[in-house]
Image (spheres, one colour):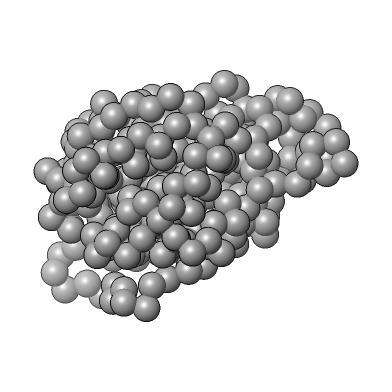
Length: 262
């Protein structure tokens, strides 16, 4: 029994995990019900706040649903062209090396449209952090197939399900980048459960600390829900992600610097 007068149990634990960060300037957003991206943005803002980097951070936004968060996040933001956020972040970090710089992109923007940008930035060891919100669909344009859409998944452009022979296999970006010498930290998280949210927050902190220590390029991919693009209800989104996406995109750290202590 709680002795402080505060509620206990699952509901109380959920409130602890899903408390809004002060760096989010609004209680509302324009994304669809059941979308996982607001959870990812919230814990990212919490992490920056806890690191004491609120006034020292620059976000370079790609193109996609999450572009709307530029008006909600209480940090400096720039807008990049389709797939070009890593190139723009490279310029920001080289001109302002003391800033904490990160890109915020979806799988359509980073992996489908801008794969060459993120690969070359990683190979060069650029000292910024790339964050990919992977919902395996082009959410902003109505739910079409992206390079991360899993086999069998229905989208607006693969109504019969993605077929390997016709459409190819999904690209696993963290696994691809982990082998590059310029890459210091790579991880994948999820925000479809309270445990996933807590773990992803730790991954964000490790990636940003890698950048703050100047150890090299860092990337965190977050698998997020997109019920609208998946043809399921908001309530079914977490189960769909658990059953269909996470077997293809397993969570955890893929590469970590020895000198990192968080």
